[in-house]
Image (tube, rainbow, N blue to C red):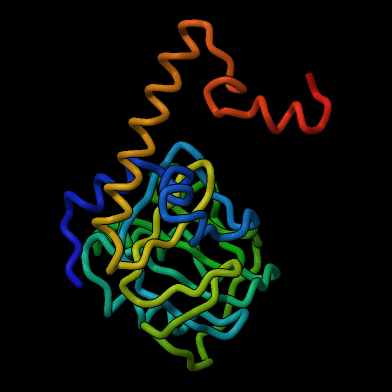
Length: 213
């Protein structure tokens, strides 16, 4: 399914937390995958890579299969003692127009990557490099932080974390997210007028049931 640049821009603006709630609290990647630079946002279709820990041959191959705007999603099996991605691959990805990287493992050259302004989500940093000998797979389903990511799924990431959106559900997710934003805007208006969250969320009966009055 083709996702338009306008849809990607909208998802990026909505943010991971809003999207997660709007799509029924599904698709959240575990909190161990964190942004190198929390100020950057990222959204784009996934190109998935299943590779052997401590080897990045398949990353180099995968970059030949990407298109501008893609997010490279690399399953390095959570291995933290080597970084299969660094500043040179970051430059290569930028030249290809990639939107960002998610790696279930470590990266290296952290400061350089931040200075280059490329969104990267990873589990850690390692100064150790990797080999380029082992085969793997590209554009197959991978399990990332407890969530299955299929090729073409939309990855949205920001300071709060990562969420995966089924490519076939993008329109409905955007609509439900927009509705949620509108609802929250109305709540803010009522809070400014002096209402409490207990009143606005109708929590009075529940609190009373527990004797919290």
